[in-house]
Image (cartoon, rainbow, N blue to C red; front, side, top):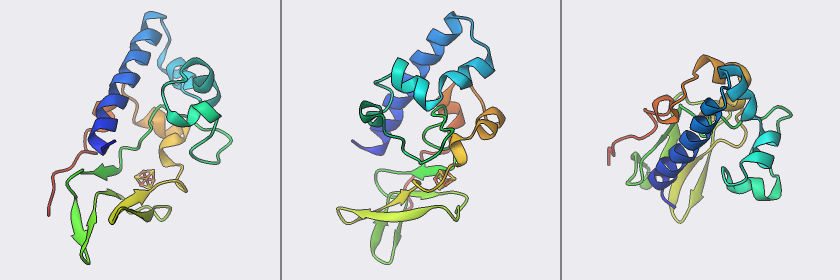
Amino acid sequence: MSYFSWFVEHDQKHHHIIQKLKEQGLSQNEIIHYFIFENMVEKEPDFCLLYTNKQKCHNLKYLNCYMCACPYFRFNDEGIEEKEGVLVKSLCSINSKKASRFMYEGVEHLDCSKCSVPHTKAFIQKHFDEAWHKIMKDCVTFPKV
Ligand code: SF4
């Protein structure tokens, strides 16, 4: 699946859950609480592929899935840039020290597995918007290659 396909599909999933929770009258804090990993595994099994095996993407006691992916993630399926002859399709816009890289089929991608930034309650409260695509509006970039 391309980054962009995932982005569009995930936005729709997020939107449907938010609509359901709003119809139930949940407050902002209750909505955030709903997105805690353990609750999502039980109530929204299709939200993430990892839920099938109850697997966390990060080894955190408190893991909140509201903001998956991350507003600092940048991607372009055509490539953001070329570094030393290698096409780069995703990167971290704040150059987090926790960010790393991996190669897949000759293309370089960002690995966020050691970074907890978007999964904390404080970060989600600070950047909260019911519309996931608004929080993530800068993630889709235009190719520079
Ligand atoms: S490394 Fe951390 S801050 Fe950077 S894009 Fe990934 S999750 Fe976000």
